[in-house]
Image 1 (cartoon, rainbow, N blue to C red):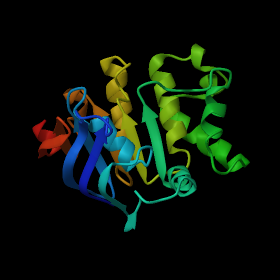
Image 2: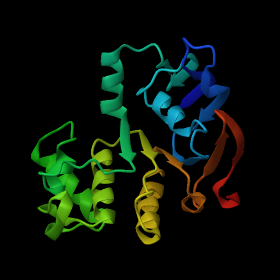
Image 3: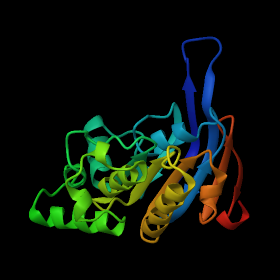
Image 4: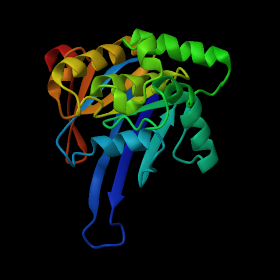
Length: 225
């Protein structure tokens, strides 16, 4: 699905001392599976995710997604790609505070018909949020419930790639593992990329990529984490 060639991201280009967030490396990612990307702060893992998702443009290198070079897309083309094929889950849920849990999910749907509402309900139910929670606003939900609602929102359009940047950092271990169970199930049919500091949540990952100083330091399967 992704073919990454010599990807480089340099900050402070106009200064003598440049900062290499990505040092120039190759990477291939599959069509499906749960891929963990781990490393300390400043290792480049979030920058890599932003480049793959077209939220940032690398300084150099190529990112080929399903045979299409995406680093040269126009802004409007990147927006269409993100809307139609990508989903995003972040450390903070970013739910709209004055909207119900159900409305927070359906607001992201490309199709605003009644079918989208029913799909949103099925997603929420699958994450343990029933009718009692549909009408609750984010402040009335627990941290785990808010994050699961955010994941349901990210999944409403059946994205081919789900980008999750520190999705469990604000959760206790019980809720963190529950969220990872949801992401693992989704990875059976789509690609899920999880950026994290927490090695323990990647025990069921299909592959774990470690980053250090903007480069890949190692790769292994999840069982070896």
